[in-house]
Amino acid sequence: MNTCRHVLTALTLTLGIAISGYSEVTPAKPRVIATTDGEIDDRCTMIRFLLYANEWDILGLIHSSSKFHWAGDETHEEKGWKPVEWLDRQLDAYEQVYPNLKKHDTGFPTPDYLRSQVFVGNIAYEGDMSKPTPGSNRIVEILLDDDPSPVWLQAWGGSNTIARALKTIQEEHPERGEEVSRKAHLFLIAEQDDTLATYIRPEWPEVQVLLSDWPSFEAIAYPWKKIMSKELQHYFDRDWMTANILENHGPLCAMYEAADGAFRSEGDTPSFLHVIPTGLRSHEHPSYGGWGGRFALSRGIWKSVDERGAPTHSILRWAVDFQNDWAARADWCVKTYAEANHPPVVLVSPGSDLLAAPGERIALSAAESSDPDADRLQFKWLHHAQVGELGGRIRIENADTPAATVAVPSDADQGDTVHVVCAVTDDGTPPLTRYARIIITVND
Image 1: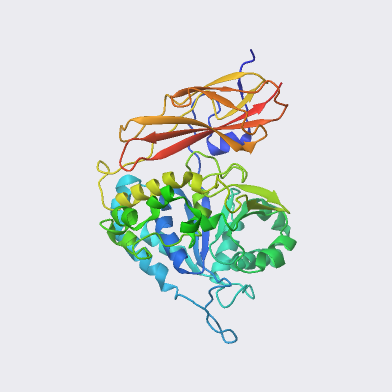
Image 2: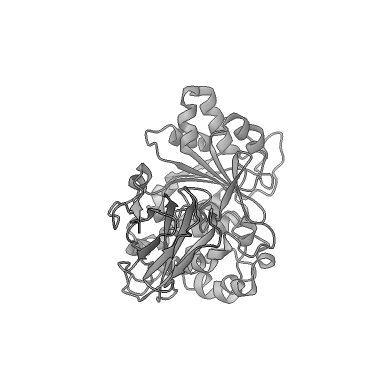
């Protein structure tokens, strides 16, 4: 039998993926900039975003417009605009819970730092990219800085402020175009103005664009009840929201604009769920999938794969896990470290990127995984059949134990890939799950 071997790439070194046994490399925090049109679901989204502020290097919180909301100017009447002070008030509430959040992770940014990252972008009208603004200039500054790592540019409304930034670079720094194209990673929640079609795609065709469209983001947006199963709705209904988020969890969670006590809408939340470091490695490639959904290349952009009524929704398959995770973050606002729950740490052996021959049986182990609260752990090994070339043909033995065996089909072809996910869940309250994605490449 051939021995399973590690695939060693520059990517594994950069991201801290295990390259020989267990990884000791600490991955850098993803760099993120969020643009928002201030709609009610943006405001709900921002509540959850701030509870995960320790997970990223936040480089901008930028007011922008959309086809639904704009501030108006001398030639455009205001449309459904929420004055930008809504974000200031949320940051004031964040300041009140910040001392307790720090008890759970010292990486939470200070309130003053977050305030320093608030900018007003292009807000005058739908698709406004008529001139540079403080918000667009902030994006320019980050895209032209010395750090070559990706910048995740999230459009919770229109993409116009991002487009204006790219236009400034095109006009003033045309020699930096290739560099910026590698660095800018756009995550759009639908097309909420026409700037993707009329400017970004024609002028910046090499920029990676992820587009979460209907019905992907809708699953946790306004029509969520029409898309979720009854079983999932429990984690979004009034009783769950009241007990886990709205009451007795501090002033920030109390600001959540619930719909008669129930979950309202967070259609923009997939944009940052995508870059929470859960172990699913969704940030490495759009096709892998994770809490923010899964994507396939279509006419030059990465578009969400979900179809209405499809049984395996690429976001909702993880919904119980990310709702429980949110509930734990709400606890962090008010509870001591000992009183709250924290996610397990998943370690897999022999590695996360493996080579195997057709017919090979691969022994995998997550036995060295641990929990910071000393909770008991449950293990579930899953074949992520929607990713890779082998569909549902993968057999996993002992899938409910710390050590499992994956059998590669004997007729697998050179270059075929198998994505195995190890989900590790603690028995804390609420139960929390983290993962390891193991990618096996067939090499005969």
